[in-house]
Amino acid sequence: MEKFSTVTIVVALAILDQEGRVLMQQRPANKQHGGLWEFPGGKLEGGESLGSAVVREIDEELGLAIDAEALFPISFAYEALGSNARQILLLLYGTRVWDGVAVAKEAGSAIRWVDAEELAGLSMPPLDIPLAQAVIPLLGACQR
Image 1: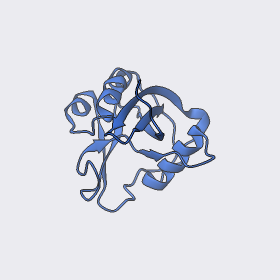
Image 2: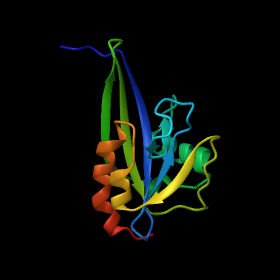
Image 3: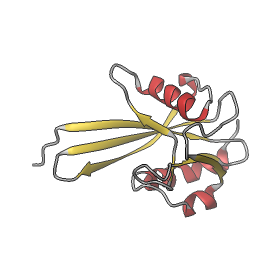
């Protein structure tokens, strides 16, 4: 049986608008998976709850105010990284409620609202691909 010594928990958010679209973020070219599109989010910090991590990351990356009470779980994905027994666990939440106008705050990143067809055609990091498949059925039922 494989043993894993480190699990990195990453939270991400599918922000669903009333027009049946989801907000995606393009990674800066100088980072791992640079140029690929992903659900915005980031790593859980020590002592932080999952909901507060989503709220913090979305504020830092997009300038949007999210209420943790408006989050709902969508799916998760995981990956074992190489032979050093590390894992990444990516938890995807959704929301239909936010305050503010999204802005790509990280240098070199971009954001884009996409519908189901566009989402299916985006180039994404491996862990975001199955999450996108879980989001597609939700896009027809969005109401902000």
